[in-house]
Length: 316
Image 1 (spheres, rainbow, N blue to C red):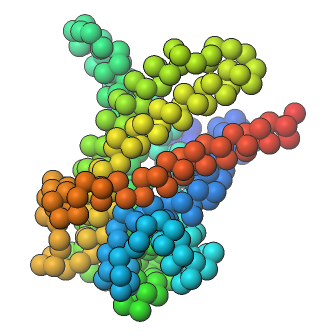
Image 2 (image 1 turned 60 degrees about the horizontal axis):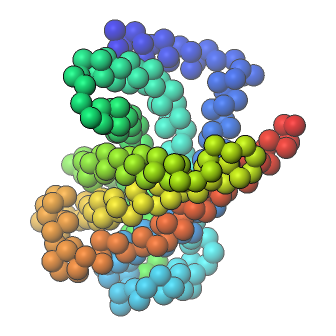
């Protein structure tokens, strides 16, 4: 049954006409994602470096002294292009994500509808179902693109002892992995904690978004309603991002740590990583770069709004 649904979807994907609505929407969605990722890439780079402020891996003699110090060092070492390291795979991941979402959307919806009907009624059933459905869809999509995320993290973080980038291209990172087949499973280092973070993120997002929509003039037509919806969505996204940020920090640490020899790795798993960060570095270390992450979220959203308005006028 499931294979038949996926087969039908795949056939539709392959046979979609070049001027068809699917291909147009596919390309449009990818371009929007690419624009948002590229505009916010410098903030993402600073956030990533702050999450893993490690002397050996970053090639630094001293720990970073805040975000501005991070910006100064990146610019001084690599110039402007240093802030865009790893943006290529970040943009490319939208292609498999878009395609996979298309292939599995109907299947996940069917599964979740069956589960919803089979589950006895209880307070908050619809909300719980929405969170679970989003979690399942997010986990499936993440399972496809996660290796690209891992490679990007390695590409950005790994430095030589003199501070120069260890890798010049993403292919070099992949070559290192292929040369040591035993390390290939590390492509999914931190995957479990990433999946675990999807559910609380969506739960908080839906809760805050619904609460803000009730208090803001989201039902108004025109710019006032659009602005209210944007504020509600961004407020919800920021609240969810801050709440789940420690799990993202754990993911980045595990991704960076995975390339060490097994006997030299600092963390045994997600819980061990979380515990050690808290005990050794304090709770603040779990939120390093969170402010830049919030700014990145807003910047990406604003770029999407600007892009949407520009393309709308062009089509009109």
